[in-house]
Length: 286
Image 1 (tube, rainbow, N blue to C red):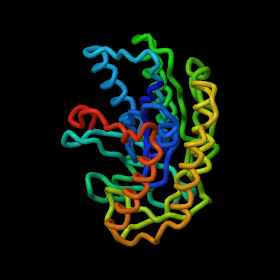
Image 2 (cartoon, rainbow, N blue to C red; image 1 turned 120 degrees about the vertical axis):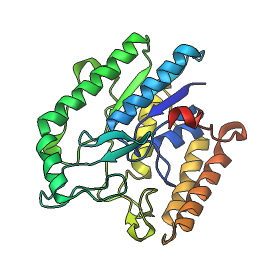
Image 3 (cartoon, rainbow, N blue to C red; image 1 turned 60 degrees about the horizontal axis):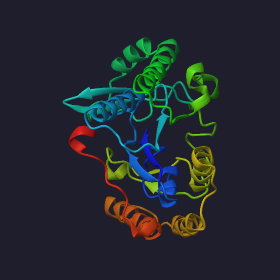
């Protein structure tokens, strides 16, 4: 049985609606998902390095392990503050007069003066160079550790004219499928991000269940040349019905209850009635 080890942002691990990772776990893959909503490429690279360093100490014996690295938006800046990861950005919106999306800085709003200073430093050239360097780091890590079974996905930038290219060395490992925000998802779901207040409930514009199903099918065919099982299709039908009748969320308690109910549906369809695999030691990975 193949094991998928996943690194990424919310496009690989998000809320009650299943991602491709959930779908592939129901389809028979073992899944270790270290993706974290809202994090930048620096965080994704750091978690990959930590994982490979631990693998050096405790060698991975699973020869059928597949690693998925889902790169996120290039204009997110990740940093460590008081031993915890934080994030600023994205920096570019459809309207240049708007404030940055998700503008917070250690629970405090960024001042207009600080915004101006950051924008002067974080140019498109800077982001492009950083995005390229992170890719070369990932490529070098896999080469150093002699890992051949890896797959790269890249979140499309919010503005098409600012899309950044993959380096040539990673193109043969690139999963050519859309990963990014969806302006018109199939079902409208309100979400309450963990780092925001209840009064900032917002409409979820992540990829919908059809997009994640397409991505799961593509990865499944790429890794083991299979189509999704009948069991997985039944799971998708039930969880889609659940999402279609999703109640209007007004409190954190309702949001948590919806996540728990979606998780119960998933557990029911897992092969051999196994529960989802837990993350490794959070002290190491968070």
